[in-house]
Image (cartoon, rainbow, N blue to C red; front, side, top):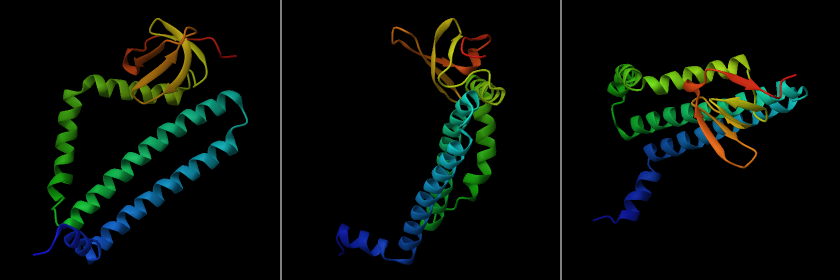
Amino acid sequence: MLSTVELLLNLIFSETGIRIISIIAFAVVARLLIDIAIINFVQRISSNGHRAKRIRTLSSVSRTTASVVILIIALLMILKEVGFDITPLIASAGVVGLAIGFGAQTLVKDVISGLFLLVEGQFYEGDEVEVAGKRGVVEKIGLRTITLKDKDGVCYIIPNGTVTTVSNFSKD
């Protein structure tokens, strides 16, 4: 009877194990290359003040999105290598997405509002704004929330779907 260590070593050095290690290595390299590309792009374009803030904000959202996409693809590829049939997972993703869309309308509203906030550039990280009755410096703009810190150091996390009026005290 083989011990746990022997079983693990057999898996690692089998053809399947080598493929799984290759998938993980490829995912890590892809993530690093995307980070490097985004950082280089931001450094090249970061001359204009407001434009630089917008680029920084969009780059953090891009990096997070890329990480999630790479992770999901790598997990699906690993599941397939282990022998799990991923066809039902992929086929049911649309149905699950629809169910989540109906069940999480607030979340969807926050994300869509966040996309519009980022694309329209109403304010950027580092701007002083008043949003949802709270005034402070924008620390982070995400797809779902905005993080503000006021002059007393109080941190407010505001869902993007609740933003109806924005007062920007930093715009020229």
